[in-house]
Length: 539
Image 1 (cartoon, rainbow, N blue to C red):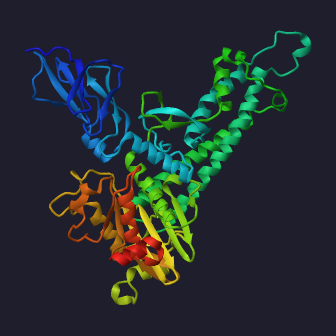
Image 2 (image 1 turned 45 degrees about the horizontal axis):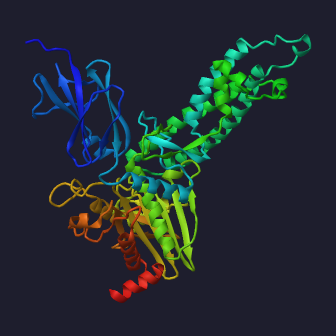
Image 3 (image 1 turned 120 degrees about the vertical axis):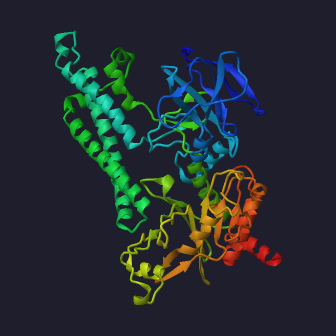
């Protein structure tokens, strides 16, 4: 029996009550998909629908369908569980030909849209960075956005792309310049339409120089990290980043050299007014982009403009917001101080040094502890120091983050150092944006986050003034999404029962705040203030 041409007749997504809602198929429509029901069903007539590439398959459903048709499902659950995100997601199809499925994922399962916006606003208020957008990775996904009030900066890779496009227009104007048809007396003066090339080159040169300094700073930081002993996978990521940035740095330098030859002193002395006349030529319109204000974007809950950058993965947003939340809790206990960020990458390398009297709390986000150099480490019978103490004396450490780890998996999200007149204490934590229904495998939950943090707690140390401070026996914690009542099965895991579970919410974190205050009271009573005294009094 011959199979007819593959055609899509309708699509189906889950409604607010979880029941499927059917819509007519339109090629350019974005269908809203909730991340707690992450699927898009398509009603197919003829041959089966096939994805164009990759491992994505459209599963044929066994449920009833109109005669000669069948339902197939594009299931996004596995992908969203690994990289939780929101915004546009597309799937190109091989059959039907020249067809693409579009869906817009809305966060509902672990975080709501309002939770995400509140987290972004908390991060931006604390660190002054645009936390909503991924400006590093080039991904096709975008989300709804609205214009914000303040100007935004531009990533070096984006600047290179813009200058590459505009350079073609500038060279075209130089090859085929505009001519004045007016009186002879004005023909010796540069035309504004030609002079804009020099003004454009001057402006972009300054921006390329600033971006070059930014990339140079980030390269210096990465090379410093590469010089220290790192686990194999982390070392590979660092080396890949160095290669990417080295290529970008070379491109920035080459563009600056090219733009040097486009400037003209007489043209720079010519006043250029971007009047409507400049819109008459596509080359002038493209060059005018360099003088437009950089308008920032904020997340929007309703359908609106498409964002310039892809939205950040929710996993990364949760981890960074967790650091901001921890700093907020310390401030509520009377600590004062401001964050310090790596100039090259604020959202992946930030620290807080907070102080209250003679008690100092130092919180590090993504501290990347150095790995013990086992190739140089003498065997146990030839040394009189444990591995961490030996490494602290014989390896190069980050002076601002002097952390060490004895296992290759030594990449916690947070390390909190407490220094008091009575001594030093160390705490370690991780953030995990997961569902309690699917987190951890096996009856013992051996691969769950509490077990991971327990390994961190036993294998990490802080090198301070000739000694190594190890984590307190109860100094481990995990940040899970709210509510805490859903995570009770993870509170007393064999082998990880001393790990504290914190389940903050961007709008209501009273219970999580109480748990953190108790944790700090146990690890370093001098740092907990009144909360520590209350806890000590009640046991």
